[in-house]
Length: 77
Image (cartoon, rainbow, N blue to C red; front, top):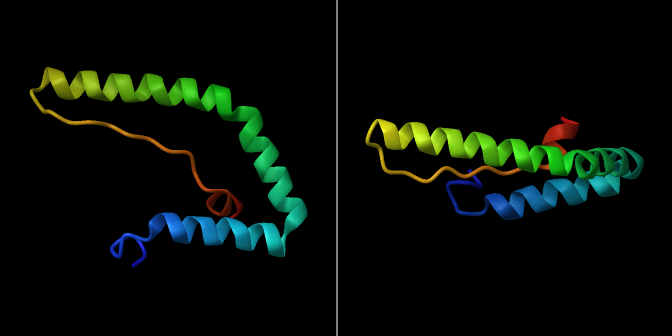
């Protein structure tokens, strides 16, 4: 529903804030894990995006591929 209303970003922020408030130790652990793996994830994501865009171009489909990291709340769930 939040996505359909254009409020997905707000929902994501509220979920992460709720996690930080309700489970501060777990939030810190997940946040640190995500930060530690961020450089690897960014390289992998760039590689995959490039491959998908190249494949789309090969078959004549114009498009832009985006990626984003998972929210901390999603990882927690």
